[in-house]
Amino acid sequence: MLSVPTQKIVIHLPLQYRAYTRKQFTSFQEYTKEDIRKLLLRSTPKTCLLDPLLTNVLLESVDILLPYICAMCNASLREGLLPATQKMTFISKVIERIVANQLKAHLADNDLMPSVQSAYRQGHSTETAVLKVISDIIDAADTQKVTCLVY
Image (cartoon, rainbow, N blue to C red; front, top):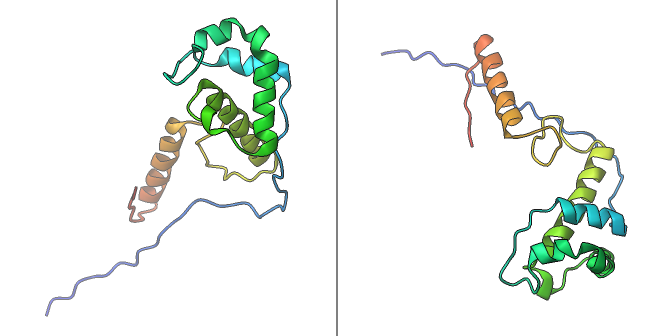
C-alpha cells in the first residue's frame, strides 16, 4: 500500500480589525455654500438625460444657483433621504460625494479602517492592494508556506 505524505495547511488571514471604539456616526453635518461650490466646480460636467438643466450650464451659473443647491443638499442630509425626482440627476452625485466624504472622515478619524484597506482612502489604490497581496505571497513562499489566492 502506498503512503501519501500529508501536509498541514495553515490559512493565514493578515487582516486585523481594530477594536470597536463605540464612536457612532449619528448624523451628517450640513455643508456650507463654499464647500458645495468647491465640490461642484471639481465635478466632471457629465449630463444625464433626466437632468432638467445641462450640467455645464449649471456649473457656469453656480453662483446664482448655489443657495438653492445648498438648500437641497442640506435638506437631504437633514432628512436622510433624496427625493425620487433627484435620484438620477447630477445633484444626486453631489450629495453622494458629500455623504461619502463624511463617512470616510468618520472612519479615518476613529481609526475604524483596517490598515491595509485600499478602497476609498486617499493615497491608496488598486496598485497598493495588488502590491500588498504580492508581498504576502512572496513572504509565504520565502517561509515555504503553501499559498492559495481566492477571489
